[in-house]
Length: 159
Length: 159
DNA sequence: GTAATCGCTGGACAATGTGTTCAGTACGGG
DNA sequence: CCCGTACTGAACACATTGTCCAGCGATTAC
Image 1: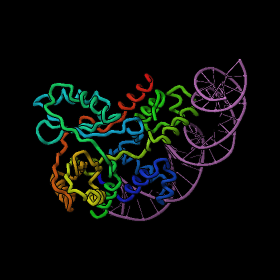
Image 2: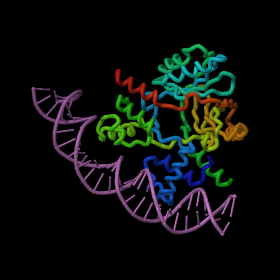
Image 3: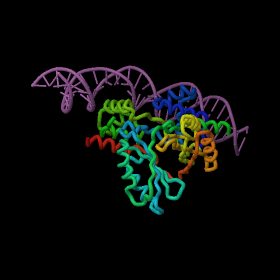
Image 4: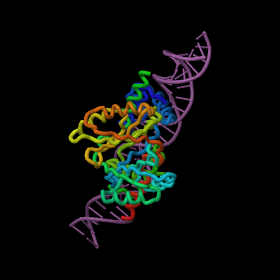
């Protein structure tokens, strides 16, 4: 569950140049190919690396508008709302958060006008008491993991 | 910028089984290998597919707690705050949103107690007027893109 | 209508990387 | 002191990749 420096370097290298293979990685890291392979296998078994799926940019797909919606749910209807939201393609993720009956979801839309359609669909189910939406204007820090990986590797070193 | 059915099937296939190569993909999709390669190249040039970086699970790294923080920023200090937050490894992403001087960021921490440390570090800069944090309890819909890809492919078909 | 363009097919080739196995070695715990 | 674990360096057959090509059908431009 904890990763060491080599694990960290493997992940960072992989994040920066995903196309390089195990062989090239072993050359860059100065270790044997078998070692890199074994580490990668372990990282995937551990669940640290979930997979290598394609990172798709919603904007390039025609959905340049992102928004976060906070939903207040009526007691006992959480399951219904979850199931409903799972059927909306524009709902990219959904979390339940502290605060009784609160959910937070990430939405995308084709335009600000289209966002209205998406929100209407999202709240188009009983059980949602109130919805507050914040439209994303800038994304100064896109979803990242490398700094955390480096931090985790450092913690391990020290420990 | 718009994707057709074949593009959609390529992305979905790739998302489900990232390890398969171009050749196996062409077999499954019933098209020539060159076609798949050309489509993939185009999707990457388009920016639709940003890359194939490893998907790392913060929980498996020892950061099982996720939270969202809404920050209210003093006028004119946005840049400072952005730069500050970019240096915090536990800040996985940062957005500026509608509502003057509002930001939304995703945080992770080693525990609920550790979250306090992270938040202290996040708000440890002038310019943040107020911070409201919501801890994630469940994640009924993990970050996903496939439904949107399928939707985009369908829209293209109809158009 | 004709020519040019585009995307897809199906095939070929050399070069590279992969999965796998092996023996040898260093390290640390029991 | 012995054992298990992890890493090295090497070997092998095999599959896949990157890169060409010629042919063909459909669409577009003139």
